[in-house]
Length: 271
Image: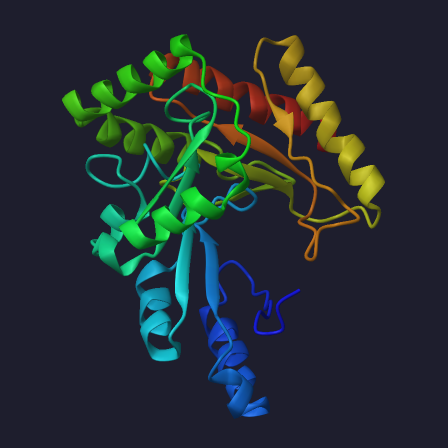
């Protein structure tokens, strides 16, 4: 392991926490700090919380502490920004301020695989040094064509992103005020969570309660799922939750039915 590499973890919205971590690392060993490579690795839109990363503040920290930003946009690409280009477009950040952007193609593009993009010297190094240069499984032509067509749709119909944003706001508002549950996530996020307002004191019992809501909704033709985690490996294990996902193809009637069903089932299970 390279001794010039160091890992510092911070909370999703903890920009101040990250600032403290970087500052303390400089104070502890100034000589080592001069050669320590610093990477700020963040998600554009966090799947576990439905929150948007504070990218403008992170870019400031990047230049202040000579760090590199790696941005994972699997959920934010095809969602945020006027043209769906992700969190950089959402905040109006120059894409040259980001060193590497990666995303899978399983969400907005309805395909498989993923992509990385960045400055030419970064991608050239990745291409020559990454394991994919030695071994790779090519994307099947059918799925490659599907991803290209999805990109064409996004480019030719930028209005779908405004429609998606309105649908997300609508479902967020409709799910407010459910007795015993709280909505967790940004109103712009198409993936957000329903958590218990108060834990029973046992994670196992919390999971069973939420699973009962999921099962009853499924019996009424509303597909939900509980968020799953590698509990022994999570540094900060999130509370049990039901993950809600909104798509641009869902009609207003479908969203209204989903919201009303979730409310009715939750009240029956939790009261």
